Amino acid sequence: MCIIIDANVAHTFGDPIHEDAVPILKWLLKPRCSAMLVVGGSLTDELYKSGEPIRRLLKTLYQAGRLRTIKAELLQIEQQKVMKLLKADGLEEKMNDPHIIALAKASGSRLLFSRDHQSHLHSVFTDRKYLQPPDKVYQTKKHTRLLRSAPKCSPSK
Image 1 (cartoon, rainbow, N blue to C red):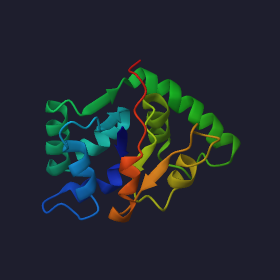
Image 2: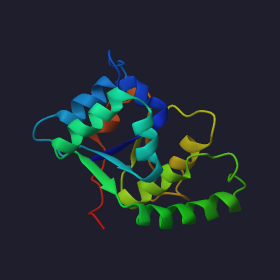
Image 3: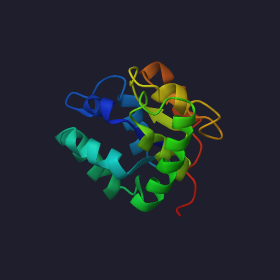
């Protein structure tokens, strides 16, 4: 069971934590639960630049064994594949987060916490053409049910 957190929602883990981020934080830190946060490549950099609260969360999850980092080399290969598909669909310039799709492909994560409505991230993330099976996007606490049904990450490569 794993989730990807987009940098555009990193601020929701600040002090005080936003009500939409509370269920995710509780899920990630729940004892005897296998929930994990997946990071890697440029998303890791984006999250670290997002401020001290998200950096503290990453450190806490790492110490708890709940942070999974995907190797940059693997992400580069997956991102090249994603970019080819985006280019074929005319979305290359409109979708500014191909690294997130690559991270989902490489990790097996099929859940994203994001509020990116300006690019085509949500539509690409939930499209079978890009991800098999397609993913789900958590945007508000109303989507808490998605945490219970999140599939496990793929084994490390």
